[in-house]
Length: 251
Image (cartoon, rainbow, N blue to C red; front, side):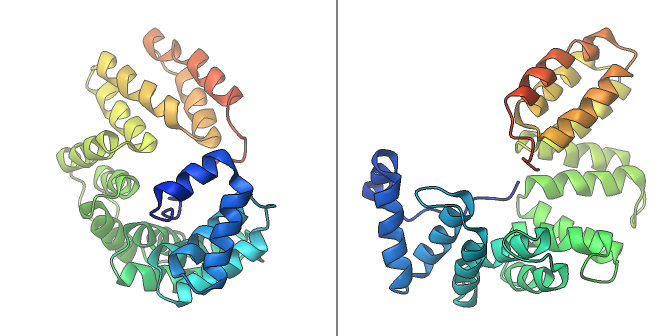
């Protein structure tokens, strides 16, 4: 899941969204058309989500691009995300990488993470695991929870860097405590290996409460094969969570 574009800093506008989303969206549209860069980024988000306006991802990408061109870092990242996923356009990971690079170059952790994902998989850019790890590490040090989990994975598996189980555990713990459901599952996996089932179940419970459909389905498969009844006892919580989610949700 990507971060939402920051909302306009106005309590009155937030109250208007709660009371009349259409009127609030019209106000944001007027500001965006008047050249307010933050409003342009917010309007793009509204169009992509269909909040207060008819959902129109193509027009949403247009406004993300307008705001990104004006220097809005969040819009740069979200323009890249739309291009990477083909949301409102034909997928173009190479162009997505350009926007990610611009935002990452100005220190945006989400853009570092997204650019690292392209480098790690060779989409839109030549595959470069070492550069991917460097970006994950930079984002992790800036506090990006998903990158913390991936730094842990590189260190656990000895990918690009020498294996370091203690450092991997530390990054998994940081990721879990920062709220990343994949980091929580990674930490739980290590705790199971150490025989700490109670703590593992605690972190898996938190991961289930926040996980995406694809993650939860994968986790359910793993838990069904687990030799520990305490882990299998979490399966009903996964089923309940899946029933409440949009099947297209990502993260």
